[in-house]
Length: 217
Image (cartoon, rainbow, N blue to C red; front, top):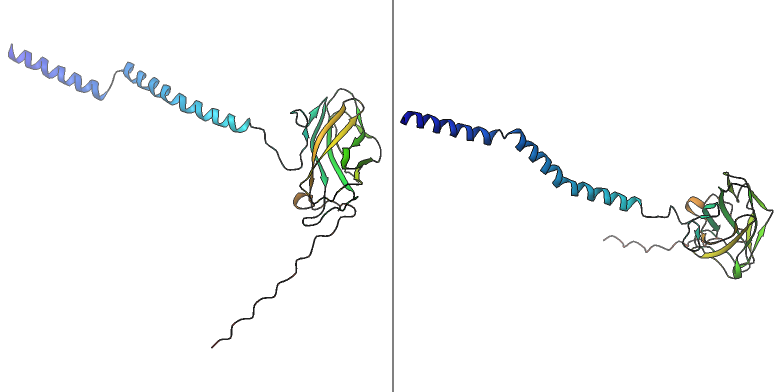
């Protein structure tokens, strides 16, 4: 009987060693599920991070239009994705009582055509509208092409760029849209625009005399 006990003991030991080296299917499945469960919070955190980045509003450039009361470029079907007042060259200025063109990109997504009838700038001057600007449905209209149709005139102070002027746009259908429009310098992506009338030229830097070189000994 001793040899039978010894054979059973050897067989049980081999079975235990085989089980450790090759877990049963149920054990392997449990390991996979556990790994997936532990990885899930990490993946969820990555997803939240991407959403947090892409969902944050951001400004494409400084020539943007900010609508009052928290709205951005959209009121009553009127979208204004870009708006700016062209100022002087960098280092120059628009003089007192001077003029500056206003550039707007306007998209009318309402069901009917609209018209930009008038623009006012409060105490920052008057806005001349050469003619009512027609806004067909779903057609982007640039008020600066082929020539500026809106001109800010009689500016009560000199402008160097970087200022912001509130404009009230009067539409026939959409009503009044109030915007804070930046004054941008004629540089970078705005360098090819025609200069604002009456802008003073930027000062020319004067060369500095270099110190004489020391005589060699």
